[in-house]
Length: 125
Image (cartoon, rainbow, N blue to C red; front, side, top):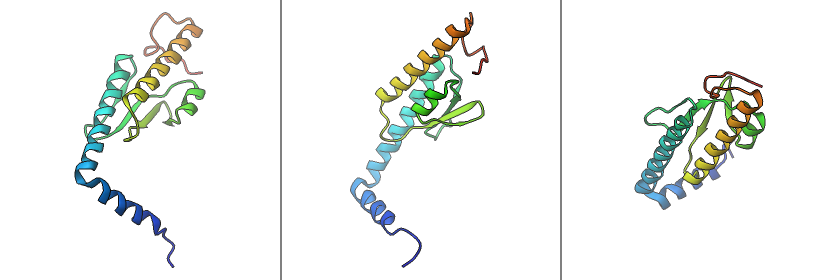
């Protein structure tokens, strides 16, 4: 009869018992690997990105198109955005995200008729 939900601890207990220590360890390693992969792909594309060593949160330049931000449900603050790489996020999904981001940035450069890459242009629309 308290104010806390009693289901959450039951689900946590069930998951801990089902997966075990090794299962959680594998999931964490996958998240870290995928986060490093995302950071690498972003940097290869000329997009500033950072990642703390033991984190699965990749911080990068905020995309200028709000439609893209909403579609991917990006968490943004000012000129930065971040993605938390969770166990359900696959390499294929990361590739789709980066490829679409590259395409959007390329379209923006063409619309502005900018001869340089977007990473040196600071057009915000």
